[in-house]
Image 1 (cartoon, rainbow over the protein chains, first blue to last red):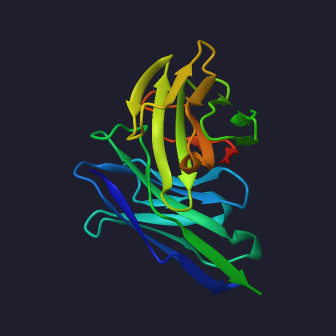
Image 2: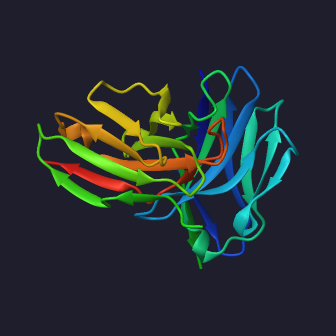
Length: 115
Length: 113
């Protein structure tokens, strides 16, 4: 069965600093990987996706992630944090075995941005 | 294009009652999935429908059911509500035939008292 581990339930950065949110996955077959963001009292917004094309994926709001098969990782980065980036971030995986429509999510990482 | 819409946004029910939640996907999307989000269990997959057929199902009791209509709109039903069913229920639709790449609605916040 597939699984996702997000290291760190909370990450704090200063405005303008690098954002790095970690995600490791487990899948016995090639995965599709996603990052979503959730603002308070809202649904999930798709930030970016890896679907077996380029390993470096660029998303919205300046975020990007790199798929590293050897490390089974899909870490999310942003060069310079903005106050508006404060939210909860979820990494998710799907694959052919579980059904591509069955997203398995990590527990989430709350990003805190201080002035 | 309008996004995924869910109604109602907030709901309060009593233990033992049943509830129906509604989801309208993005126009042209035929795959609709449902998820439950709770502080303790996180985000968990409930089921997915494509062209009115349930294609995938998560590990939830039979009290949780759903259906999809010919216009791709979907409903989920929870019967005999328990306190533990209090959660944010999220609906997502996908433009892909496989259901991958999902776009989420704002959710329905269900509180069971």
